[in-house]
Image (cartoon, rainbow, N blue to C red; front, side, top):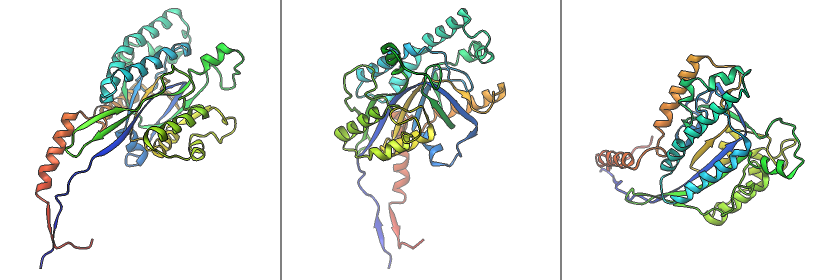
Amino acid sequence: MSLELDLNLEPESKEELILSVVIFGHGCEDFLNPFPVESEIGEYYRNNVRVYSTPAVPDISSVMATTGVRRIVDNIKSKFQDIPEAETIEIVNSIKEEMRSNYQESVARVDQLGIFKDSPNFKRNIEPRYLSQASNLVAYLANKEFWFYDESKDEEIKTPLQKQTYENIGMHVTDIRRKITDESGEIRYEQVPLPPQRLSVYFNLSYKDGVKNILKHLKKELGINTDIKEISRILGFDKPKQKDKLKMITLVELYEFFKACRIDYVNIFDLTCRSCKTRRLNENEIANIGNFESSVSRNTKAFGRSRKSQKKSKSNKSRKGKKRRRMSKTKRR
């Protein structure tokens, strides 16, 4: 006697959370020690995180004044608010294109002023083959350190102007939205309202108060409960000299934070340098890493695919599923 199971179950709706954040400070990446391909963290950063970078090219520094960050963050936040029900790739691409000419002009201006004329690293910034690739999508294939200071790690903030400038540094949340897939496979997006104030430390994740505020907001708007002590430990607020503000954080710690807060997808606007942590990369290494990053950024699963490709995928799965909707006599495996 055969036991037959009907596997033609009704699909369920699904909600996923997308976070967008701007990071400004100093950065270096461990290009020569990439995440293991099959590791959870490696898969998360390849498949669930979209990365915009100002220099874009591996082992190239970022040329940006701290005082200009406030305008950039406010502009990015307003673009998200203008299109509250759109898939975020549309917004990211518009920002990428808008910022490219401004960033390239900035680099050219710095070159003309001779500010970094004695820096061998800056010479790469102005090479046409590298500058033409600036302001683009990349991928995090290895761990990265972000340092949150202006000119030196031990600098002191003494004046109100210094304080205001210093608040530009950090990790600024610019958008939260839900990706809702209904039973038929149709996708829509809903923005989670953020407070209307301009750039401040209110949602700056490098400040402990900023983290508390975002966790309260996630609970109020989405019912997500988190342990503030555990989140603070994950981000590093228990480390020496980081009680109220982070001096440094890594992609490993950010990954643990995203998972703890149930963040499914992340847009990161990375305005920091892409310096190699261990040594200067040669031209072939830059090209090889850059090409791999480009292929990853173009083929991000689920998060980066268009609706058309998602529907096509669903259609293919449906046709395959019809062939195996009935099973005869189940066996233990």
